[in-house]
Image (cartoon, rainbow, N blue to C red; front, side):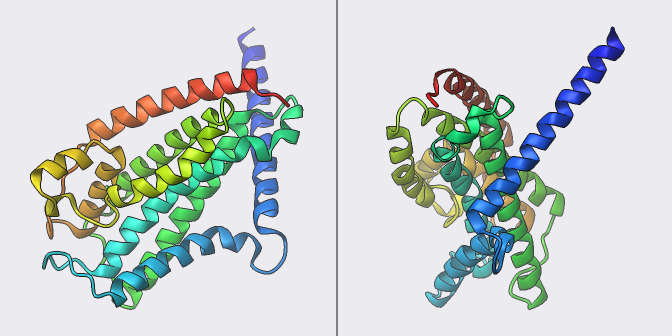
Length: 265
């Protein structure tokens, strides 16, 4: 009996991996096509955005309180992380409508569509961050990370936040199209408060307390703590961020489950 259950589980798992792989290939071809750079745009697109922001900030001669933080490193660590959680949620907010025909197939679920889109955005943003970091470190515009493990921990927490938020918003679009329309202005409003363009230490005390309610601020602070070390004081509570991400994840999974029951094909 136990052997049969194990065999059945492994068979189901293999089918699930094939479904996710097929959805990922379809998403790549649909989004980027087969010609020219093709799937290289998965990495190239976030790189172009990050390079643009880095160039603008550098050209403007932005200084950060005399802390000695290189503007290039500051921009790359901030904007790359924003792209990850924002783009993942953007893609999931349009995921159900764009993939309705696929949901006729019994083996394809709404959560499969979301996981595919989330994975692509995390891979793209992570690859862009790695490539830009290596490039700027090589030419001397960025320092080597002070603690790579802390950088990885911060990036993982931001990826978790992005994935959980994407599930919640994406699932919510099945209940009302207003969720999709509201998300985009909300994302723009969240960007200046996300910690990408500032360090919490530079803010007045009362403003620090407000922005630290946002979980992604803790992730960026941890990421920069690992990158810059003690150059500037950072404020992060990873326990608080983990609690927020766990709540978002559970709520997102519940909303996705309910969305699967009520979606009209």
